[in-house]
Image (cartoon, rainbow, N blue to C red; front, side):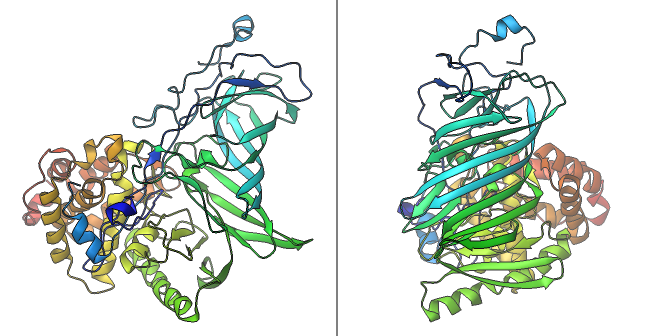
Length: 551
């Protein structure tokens, strides 16, 4: 997303946020990822263990890297007009060697080309159980993060990604474990090594005030845990989730989630998935949210404030629930409900062309103030009071398929989130709202050309949410393919790409393999020119003869 200082209304997402506008809708951008101030390396021993060492131990898993979620931004018509003028370790089995640990380096995560220090090797998380006692007035948390995981190699130590906050105790399989901090790494040494293939559980108790993260890919906003006027919300793409809970912070390790939030009774607390329990005891409200579908860490969300819940069922197996600020005037509340009324039609359209909505619920939470961006947190998208434009709403919804269910395995492939969600929002405007798709795309081509949009397949980390490249030129890539192969083959490509990776991850090579299988090498060459050629192609081109479509 882009900063408000540059007159852009930002849509975070992720995976991830809303796309540039049509006619009255302006461009979408993403929030920057922040670098984390290093912590002094220190080692802490759980109370029941022997005295801690003074050197941060080397983990048997690569230290985690910070992952940043893509953010999408959209401007008003006036803001877009202004914006258009801008150029735009491996674990050792040697017990003696393991007794002399060395300091972990921050650049040995899962190997993401943009965020090499994010994530950790050596284990796969299967489930997170996060429990937060939140004071929204003081903006503090008292939290316990429990995770279940499977060791993929023998673990003498392992890392979780966590920035700031004070860790008090760590246990592994119920036994106290030693731990140390190094930059955004929480290094954990279990009392006993964990054999490869073993399931294990870890629990981290921690507290403090979450501090948002500066991310090298999000140049307009610090990301993670936000606190504004006693309202809490999270927008973590790509690396910000480690500002409020410890995790294996990379999309390649998705997991299911239970998120339990306790707040003062006057506040509402919302999160991902389904609300399965709510109770008020002694003036404190506790809610439990369950996400049974795999989710990337950056898409987990906590929302706390004074909100009203509006819900209905689109069908028996799909709940729609929206949250609107109780402080709004009757007129503003009515206007918000009316703006969100496009959701059912957008869901039905995307299901018709892509397949069933991938989760148990969907909805939107609208902040009672101008937020400057929107983001597609899984099953409950985040909006400010100024991003309730049909295209932005459709963009965040489209991310539930492309970005949330199907997620990139390396952040350099972000066009597979933003380009797809942006183009799907244009298709929605054309099909459901009667807009002229060719005219909209001609305008996008003109603007991408004027901006000299860089190829979306060859961006640098600082261009992670470059609107003209990652949103606009990536959208034109898909439209050029659409024109070449026609509706039937194009939507076959989208569905095959989605279905082959639903619930998991993907990359550009996998998408191009689908294109080649269903549309031929010529179509792959066309997509490649839009993704990788330095110059913006001069025309979207006319469809070739039918005989050439599957050459």
